[in-house]
Image (cartoon, rainbow, N blue to C red; front, side, top):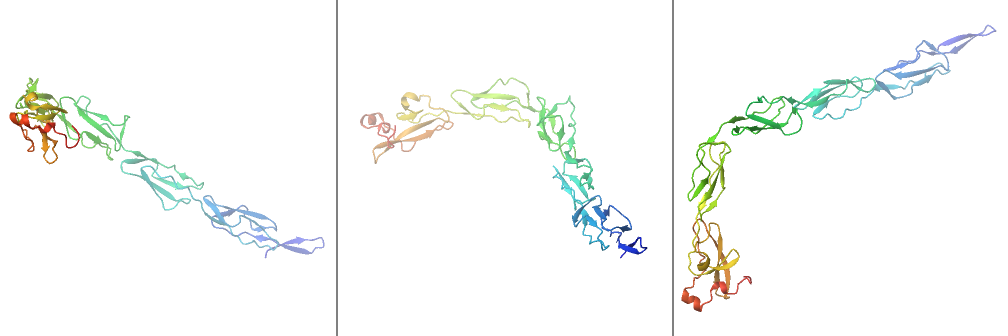
Length: 346
């Protein structure tokens, strides 16, 4: 144990103990560094930059016996906070401690705005600062402002970014071939663009028992229309208009359907919610798709019931249960239409 002599007036020498240089601690430094320390002298340890105390004391005093007490201080690397998740990107890390490095990457269609890596500093902050993932920008599609093909953005703004969609149109009378939309790709290019072509349709076909309104033009371009009509008493079935399609063909034409004669001479029927007689109301028959109801007799219960039949392009079938009464039969028999309804309703 080191001692220090003390000279007394009697010329006797007294030796007092002193503490030697304190032990070195990994990742820490003492505030006083010398070969000897007097009794009661204090030293303080501090962790090196980038490290923080994990356990043990930081202050120690040289005791009277001249031996330093057990040094218990332990320092460990400081941790930086875990960064917030990146929008449209990822953070790769194996450690968050001092001097560790994290790496950034972006999802497909996005690019890094900022550093690709960042390191944990002694103050517990990442340097350089964290980046952001920005969407890839697509330039305006390669379309001349004087061409027939035009486009519009489907969302506000003047910039198109990854996954944005634009919609195309052709100036009349041109027809658009290809997709009506294009999407901004991860490469910064647009998906395939459509093209505009001239399309003409032949003279529209006539329809039997009908006519074409104002069909006086010599040529018909894409989206031109014509309208059809039927000669009375025929009825139009199908679309009244036909349009010139991009295929160069008309969208379709309607058909004129024929009326139906009532194939009985004497009967009371239900038509448009009213009871009427065939002989008084149907000299011209009924039109295509119209329906009348014949009355039939339930012999077991002596009541009547209605059976519908529809005119289909000149054909109308009389229900098999209907019995037409001749003139003399009508004088002695009650027509089914005048019997009590089987269902209790007229």
